Length: 466
Ligand code: AMP
Ligand code: ZN
Image (cartoon, rainbow, N blue to C red; front, side):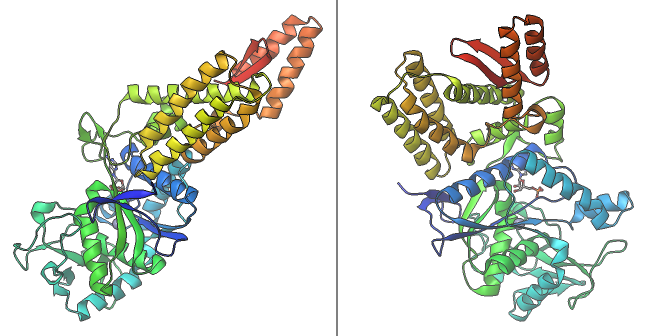
């Protein structure tokens, strides 16, 4: 079966192809840079990384835009407390976001765009909405009149037809019970940063930011729009209302939403105080690969319950994968090719691909790999796995890691290159041959200090990283 995704808009799983068959035009809502991101946020961004990699693997080019929300209530409040300009305040957290996502090996979107660099375009869009009768002013602010947009509610599947006309909400975040006309442009308040525009002095609301930047770089109808489930209402519902009121065209063909990362059944969030940043976990000695593995191991539409045990288990799973890779790279297998083993490898490739085609079922894809590891390790123990089977098995591992990207140890653990390690191993063998066992042990200990473990096997010396 072909590639398919669950579309929040239609509430069904639909076959996916991009509208031109070549490039996927995708917009994802990025971070609000008022603090370090936590691993709940990073779960959502990790899902988008898998989405990117799998689309690429299915032959698509990507044109992916992510916004950085760098003007917003919390940012303004915090910048004022620290007596900094918005730019000064957010620069630190933008850098931290880029660093954290790189540490987790999340591919960079083709474009990262800042809200504060698109204010004139936002004001122009609001003026166009004004002239087509979708807005009204109040005390210097401008609101979107949701009663004038009949499709309001189609993404969150709520019936808002009975709500009181004219009731307004000024904050950007609110829940369904509070569905009202929302703010497009916020009038200048004393002591707050503002921009002078034809709308008067003020700043944009959060929702207009995404509509304007998405359409500016990706056109009127996107292939995919994604974010966490908490964004379905009101943020994405409002994005649809604004964008479709402007163009009369569907804003996005596919809406993909990832579920939350929870701690003890509660959403991880800054406000609940139950959060870990990536930095917290790295400081505790966890590796970026284990954290990445944990975040991607649960299919994106299922809640992920974060525990330290789960993180340990992720590390153990990576060890198993690396041990298998080591065995493939270093063991001496009997000559020939075993067709049954080749079939088993092909079957694993198919199951891996089929799982990811199925709305990115990462848990199934991992299960396919671990069952293969179990069967193939047994085949190796029984000398059924032959030298001719190595190439396909390595191919499977490479395909797997092109998406999962967990095999390569992070820099801290991999200060020595393979060539350097091989040279040390040769020096140790030479020392042994010369019966200089003191020197041989010394070389082994030096390697161990750098995280390299040597194993003497009947086929010679094998090494692995700690
Ligand atoms: P924010 O910086 O709050 O705008 O959030 C950035 C992204 O992280 C959004 O797509 C949110 O939906 C997502 N997000 C926030 N909290 C969580 C969580 N606990 N689990 C998963 N995603 C989250
Ligand atoms: Zn957005």
